[in-house]
Length: 375
Ligand SMILES: Nc1ncnc2c1ncn2[C@@H]1O[C@H](COP(=O)(O)OP(=O)(O)O)[C@@H](O)[C@H]1O
Ligand SMILES: [Mg+2]
Image (cartoon, rainbow, N blue to C red):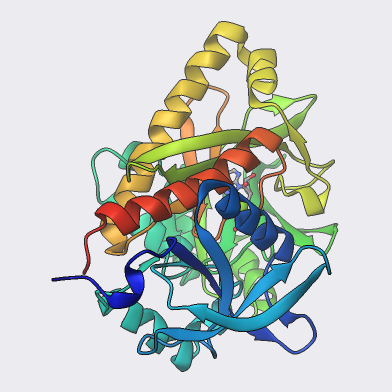
């Protein structure tokens, strides 16, 4: 019999897993956690926060945090051993710590608990996973691990624009762009654009070797990929891309919870809101470029692509995943391109996507409790 005594007659339980913090009790987007607690309350799931240092697989209770909505503060108290764990450890470095890895691996092996989204993605692994499958490959830009000037030379022979991205990057940090420019002598010059805090820095180079030297000065200790630049569709001269949220439903199936759009800030090489980008409606932006009917068609293709890509990422990663966000580009020929996926999606500001995203996390947790395979 697979029943534990403490499971009988108890509300389904979901622990948000994070790490403790000296200043603010624990890390993470606390508003996000609160919204999930409220949604759980509404849908019949007991949601609380547990930090790695308090978590224990072997005891029926542990210390956790619940929110006192009248006193407006977090209260540390004993909570039951959770049936589902939602991993929201916010930084790669923390997730890599041995004690954190030990806990995550133990949960993965355990038959008593379901943990989903065990780790961050790496941009190079994503590329390898997706480039290996016939269904996902068409959406993947030409990409290499950036290891030598030769890698740049090879890509720059084929593509006039390249994006250089740290494999562990997020929010546009460390992203550079190379533009191959034909000069008066019919030879090539290269412009390197770097996003530097909120400023852009440009340097010109008359050879790839010179460009490589500059990149070496700038990349620090980060590993990079170099990727074919996609000519994104524009709105008022500004490129935009799509942000899709893909989640498992209460039936355990991948589904797109919503697609938003982000328009690049003036002269920015990315579309991130903290870098001057803005949120907009994808139907409007696409209709402006291609007409309303075609916009609808592109969005439906983007939804299909997102589900295909999510399935392949989950399969190739070998891990149980419950959600991811995805950055997708639409080029001027209406092709859809995959830029990256994130296993710790940031809060979506679009109210409908937001509401659905919370309900789906609860729904998927209920699915895991009722039907999930115990591994
Ligand atoms: N190959 C590319 N071609 C064109 N634009 C790109 C490319 N890769 C990234 N971008 C732009 O840069 C943004 C950030 O890239 P992304 O891979 O999502 O990195 P990050 O993890 O920093 O968000 C994308 O949303 C897109 O606007
Ligand atoms: Mg991104």
